[in-house]
Length: 308
Image (cartoon, rainbow, N blue to C red; front, side, top):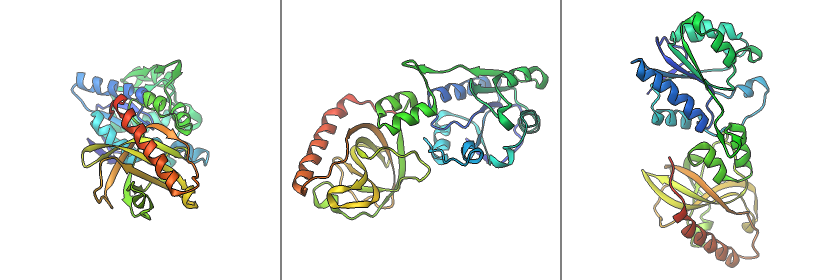
């Protein structure tokens, strides 16, 4: 996969348009269609995406991301996209839909096809829509494909629905909508070694500031490290039993693992919430609960299939 930081000429592309946060099941249909059309016509698939969420610029909100940009690029490569064009949103935020279509999409990519989701919009005041792309297809000599809503359990698969499920700690349903297990990735950093003194050595993780935050709690997770997968117990939040209520930490205890991994990058996928955080009277009761958490994972792991 080739990544272009800014506009470049790639003629006869089969384009897929969208922000693609999460790369959920609905997004996958859009991307796979663009790839299929490219293969049929012996050309290349291309995805045009903005580096930052458009709403961050348009509304001054800070939208919590399901995927960081690097995570998104890695997944697009695994899916099999040929070319990714990264654009800064601000220079294009005031362009009319007609100008964006003519002076960006047509001029630089001469697309044989454009594929979008049913609710894709672009251009000033969201003038560009599925209908707009359909009406202009003959004029600019491309085929337009609109992917209809992807529905699971009466819910249209969307980033907003997935974010809501993550905010609630419902990873079983969020993962079903994503088509893979929601994950965070980061570097292992130095901790205070308190968990190690309790017999549960843990790795402290840098949690990306742009990534959506899970609710405080204790979770059953899968840990990917050096191409191997391990079961783990993750605690996200403060450490109330140790009277640490000033610093939010992301700590994971990897089962059947005790190697030094400081400085290494790991990927942590969320499977299920085990419990809320609890302030225990003493460390003995904390250890008892940690053993119960471990027993939960040991049993539950047999009912979970790994996902990419």
